[in-house]
Length: 474
Image 1 (cartoon, one colour):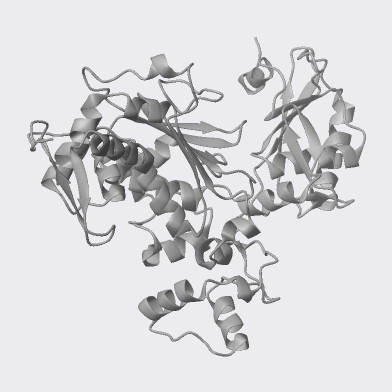
Image 2 (cartoon, rainbow, N blue to C red; image 1 turned 30 degrees about the vertical axis):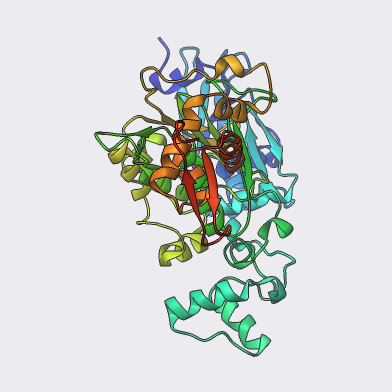
């Protein structure tokens, strides 16, 4: 019967278990300890072959290997590790040493040659890039992505935006002297010691962050049906600018692609969105301030007939899980962004509360933490209304499906006519928003009404009004 302490051998080697028949090289053992300590810890079974068989160690070798383990942990690893060993005797009289390496609390750890090792499945590998090293520092809370220096000087600052912020929040005037401005930005953790803006400063207070960091944008697409299409879409747009602008534009994109529900309201009323707007407020803020800015990729926003997906670069940090975030537990990945957003730049209601608030308003939300793909996906499920128009039939015909849908119905023309009758001073953009159409589609419907003699414009484009004419009068 196998000792319970050796039961973990049966599944084989993985990122938390390693087998060694014998150990003779102290440097090799130290590199294994470093890899476990820089990851989530693990166990090394000494006296066990790669195939899981247990030849064991002779008693005379146990003393030698335990001394070697002590030397490796204390003298060949920086910072030294506190490890545990346990000798388990086999029925043959031989011994298996169970060496437990804890998850490090002083990451990153190096071997004596200054090499940083990480676990990679059952094997280990060197850290080969700055991004990996930064992430390791990030996990140990010694470094955060929003502190990253950029090459943007204070000349890239949106002075009006920053002026209004410090006036409203701190009751300060905008400094006239550039040296005073740099000092203020440094005190606010928005600039580096060299006087350049850091990533938080760029994302929050420059006019064109995408010119400095082009990958940190939101790419939004409304697809026909429930699948991703290569070329067919109903609506698409890329949103860039400071985070507050990205948030506003992304939220508007979602809301204009939502169904409107009358809920007993008048036929000419715009209706309520099928999913409360506050749900998307919480989830978009969460995506913008908690995404992994060490991953050079945009946030993706996909809208389908039956769901909306918000896909953020980076999996949940540290030991955070989907169950924990549902319970309101959160880790701060970008503390500078969080601190400024909490001062009113975005509708932020407190750490860990966003997911809970969204779930309180709309229970049908799923979360997927893809650690291998380094992605976090939020899926908001829609309730498809009865008798809704199926756009799937259009998916093969044209990349301009939205226009085809919007224009191809006399019902839309009548809706435009009714709105203009009731609201003769309404503008085309306002009408497009109320009907959930593009301005181009509204303009084409207006052109049709004019051709039929059912509509005319009185006065200038600004300050004028619409005059509708019933069919009999026309």
